Amino acid sequence: MTMIDKIKELEKTSQLLDPGQDQRDQWNSEVLDYANTFINTLDTSKAFYHSEENGKSLYKLDITEEATDLTSLLESTKANIDLVGINPASNGHMGYIPGGGLYPSALGDYIAAISNRYAGAFFTAPGAVRLENMLIRWMCRLMGYPENAIGNLTSGGSIANLIAIVTAREAYGIKARDIENSVIYLSEQAHHSIQKAIRIAGLSEVQLRYIPLDKGLRLSVTELEKAILSDKEKGLKPFFINASFGTTNTGAIDPIDPIAAIAEKYNLWFHVDAAYGGFFKLVAGMDPKFRGIEKADSITLDPHKTLFLPFGTGCILIKNKEKLFKAFHYLADYMQDTVDAIEEVSPADISPELTKHFRGMRLWLPLKLFGLKPFRAALQEKLLLTRYFYDKIKQTEGFEVGPEPELSVAMFRYIPSGGDANEFNKKLIRAIQTDGRIFLSSTTVDGIFWIRVAVVIFRIHLEQMDLLLRIIQEKVDELSDK
Image (tube, rainbow, N blue to C red):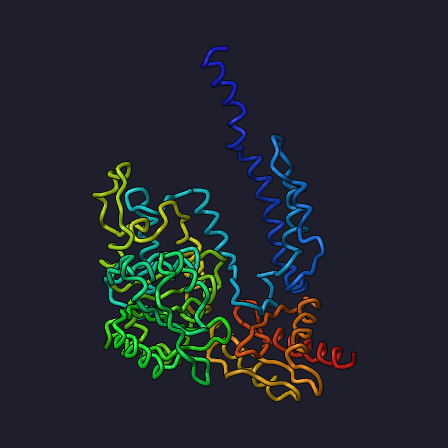
């Protein structure tokens, strides 16, 4: 067989990877039916599915040489993925800080995957880069940043926080010899991705100062300044402050403006992790809580939280473009053709990623199809629903609540007439999760076991909050009778 014959033979098989329209139409129909059934049955689906198998049957569909029909693959997807564990699309998902999953985002991802635009460099996909940078500029305006601020769409808050810490490290010229004398300030309520980013950024030997909290579980400004002054007197190098705009545990908002003033006074990098709370800026009346955020050197946002997008959609905003370039800009020889295309900043020049998904479509499409009005309404609704729950549970005999919610997270626990309260509430959260209609999560603060309600999913409405209150009382009564 000649080389030409071999190539032609391989071509026949390899062309299976490029199916014709009839095959595409069949697959499209099956997937669309699956998606519509999933969405249309959400009202009767559980928020959490307990399973002994936990999807083990998927192992029967390991990768082989032979093709498998789509119908059986979708059946396995339903049985082993969609009906196991947490249902993040459910209107009963009130645990953690969940992602949303707006339908137009799926369409945006479909378009992005079909065209497969490489959105990392302006030269390769000018329109895609313009679209993503336009979204960044919108978020910069929302946060009060100047026109020349810059940012990047990331996979989530973890990478966004990492970019901020690495940029600060380079901006302050911290070398290996400086690490053990450099100081980062945060609270124990800071998201764990901050600690992880510190380690990944090569700063694991840095001095970490966990600043005490006030009664609202917010970082204490007085204690922060005391710590900075003490460290400077010791000859250490304070360089980074992390504040949270909406902690994961309680939704608490650190005092942004006073912390910004301290950062400016002592010349520290000021980072605001607003992954959860940032987009509440869209809600009328929230501006006072955001006062000073425009003074931050960097801000983390997560559209996959409070813009209700699918998981994998984060954002970092950096006020000083030059400092971000200093940290991340490199040029490979094989990318020399891209150098002259400088009308827009290329995402690959300002992040750890070179290859990246064209994330902008999943954000731009729903924002344009819906406009901002329903997003504002949904966010304000979630704030009010959280307050409604908090007031109701607070007034219910036997219950204790955490700090008043500043955003859409509330904490509560039941105090039994006898026995250990922590143990009772551990049983209570397990009973709620096993029931499955509503999914809640728990946390421990200062040795106290709390149950968390996170009202973030766009499908949560008053009906679900009333159901939650009934389930909680039902499970308390069952446990108290035992």
